[in-house]
Amino acid sequence: MSIGEEMYQLAKELFPIGRSLTGDGVRQTLAILGRELPEMTIHEVPSDTEVFDWTVPKEWAIRQAYIEDEKGSRIIDYRNLNLHVMGYSLPVDRWVDLEELKQHIYVQKGQPEAVPYVTSYYVPRYGFCMSEAQRDSLPPGQYHMVIDSELFDGSLTYGELVIPGKTEKEILISTYVCHPSMANNELSGPVLATALAREIAAQTDRKYTYRFLWIPETIGSITYLSRHLDHMKEHTAAGFVLSCVGDDRTYSYVPSRDGNTLADRAAQNVLSFHYPDYKRYSYLNRGSDERQYNAPGVDLPVCVVCRSKYGEYPEYHTSLDDLSLISPEGLQGSYEVYMAIFHAIEYNAFYRIKCLCEPQLGKRGMYPSVSQKGSYDAVKSMVDLIAYADGKRDLIDISNIIHVPVSLLIPVIIKLTEADLLEVVNE
Image (cartoon, rainbow, N blue to C red; front, side):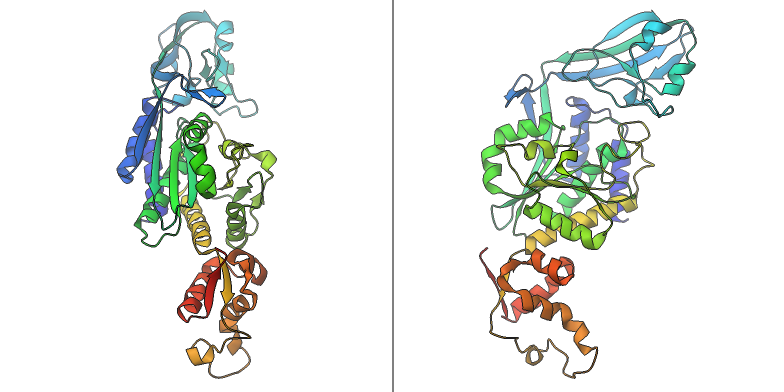
């Protein structure tokens, strides 16, 4: 089974779970991911904890919710689709007429068959979601609205995994586990992060430490930063937010606020070779936890590499973002891009050739012994790298200049280093 298929199967297992900012849905999700990553640690932060300008909300539990007509037929049922209930809805048990019922129903205008994803985390209210077509087809009459839910002092839950490297410099990988049943916007990020963490943990020669987070969006990153900001400001070399990485339509990139960090440069370099037609957005188009990591005073070097960007594809935040929207191939592509980015960062350094003029590659068996038109092509990447290895340009710079992917330059770097022709400076 391919890694992409493994990720897809994991997404299928997670899809039915009702998640929100807090609650057992998040815990159940993290327990399943923790089965794949036994070293993951789970943290609970009590409700009402102050985290910068925010407060950890009360925990939300929902047992059932439905609307039924006068005959007792269920019009919608939370157990059939957890998007049918506004996230964090207060409890309700009322009979109302159609006109009042419609005041509590949310639809997605312009998409008559889609059920929208709607929340009200910080203003108490209740509500239901259904397709515009279904709402408009409801006949006059009496309807029974039921939401069996509870808000109480509990906690916010998140998962963390730190994989140590040779240095204390870190690469941050952050994703979120707070949306109900949506495949690309919710589940593609956590399953990709899980696959990446498993692969990185299996590697034995890591320069960087890798910090993986599975958190509720916005309040989770704010909470985490409130506990770890000083450490992260000192140690984070590059960071990425994983979201919407499961479809196979395109690749997209949202820069950090600075736009020229190591994370940005590695992401742009890899994408330029892997998928040259990738969509580049402005930081003004940010929308996930890169907002928090790049906030003034936080200033972490975090960007986003995704497939179809959140908010930019028609199925986003609706019931149409189902398992048919993502694919093993889409997930596999994102996995390969991120592993290429991590390898680029791992090997990125300022390299300098150790001899004056061109080194004699032939006597080291690194150059064709017969000179003929075309024989030079096989070693062109090597001699071009040597030509720019002056200790003033790092590997990503050289890759961009000579138009050769970092992935193809890494074996050259290793070969030249083993021949004692190349050294690292200013690291």
